[in-house]
Length: 561
Ligand SMILES: [Zn+2]
Ligand SMILES: [Zn+2]
Image (cartoon, rainbow, N blue to C red; front, side, top):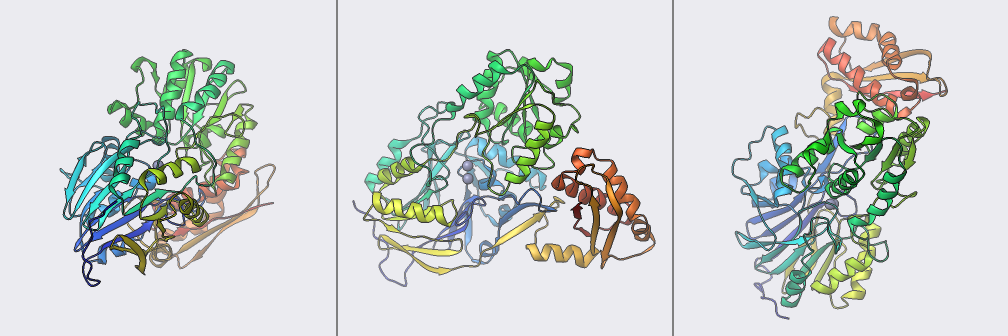
């Protein structure tokens, strides 16, 4: 195995890699790769706050280092279309002086995000195909097909003057991918045989034994569900679960049911996937959500958002009988076809309780095999290590315990490899065929608030700015846990909220306003702390903005008595 030797002068150029997100955490994956005065960024992801963190839509990596590095960022390279890999593209976009490279599906999912931020991509979105090689300054980037929980995913091999580095993106080894696009194991083996300087590999499922299994493994469970269901089948999943959509739609066809997509996330991504031919549903089989009620329940499958208990998502509204088009009854079956992301269990549990209260049958991962992970388990991760045999191994995508375990596994599979257990902001320097952690750069998280104005500020700064500009409102109310009735007189405590003619009336009527807001909700919604808090926050914010033109930070305190 020979590697091109880079400049051996210690003061000479070296390959530098800085993970800016996705290490010692799940989500907001982003990595900066630099040689001389040129950089490329691999992935630009977001992470989602707990469903109940008020006013925060997204969390993205702090981009200060990209802004201040003084290097030209010549390209943004995307592995696949999951939010934790593309969600921050609109924020990184202005910093990139060159193309954004990705597969057609990935780019199609990026486009509406740019549109939402008023960004015209021009000719900068450049579609790539597996095995395609693209020269960018001192780098040559090659895309390699991998399998995952959605179509059109790739790993990225970057040929640099110091050697080849390989970033797996997210992957599992699905030997029967629903779209027939095989994992390119041959190319990984070829690169390994030719010599790979460093491997950066997905660690998400390193603590699961064996193999994760094909997407097709859920078919059996869904067949049982379709066979037994006397009413509607409602399947909650992530908008990106396009393979899962295909499997459910195919079974629906087989069982002569129509398919309705309910909720923005699944509507949008299913449309994109259909346009690209990656999701195939016969037009006559599709039903608009508004037509669901006009069809016999036993002839319908709804694919919805809300698998994580998000208060605003379709399933949360359906669960409390507050959805315009979809109602649940005792004949219906609701399937959670997604993993419960840690932190969301409480919110998911509450949605499940509401569904159970409607008398509907509930099915989730623990009951039937209705979900299969998109990330490889330990044997698949070992296979990657065996094929690539890198000189340096850097586990990515995972919390500390996952990275540490992956590091241990790598030491067994590749005893000669140097393992770097890095964290976000570590500067990894590669020269002379090896690598080390050589320093730190500033990193952090930036919270994006719900206004969709594209404004960014750090967590503290964001709140302070709201408070500084428009003050703080703390609605305080007590709700009877059983009846949902308001106990006592609700109040709004203002801090730094400018009281003028327009805003005075809002405060004067606070208790009436709060009572109205609560009473406009169903008893079920009122007795759900998460839902009612969110409703009070958004409704009060709306009323205050409309009547006073101000946007104070609203932090509801809701007590159950
Ligand atoms: Zn992914
Ligand atoms: Zn991911």
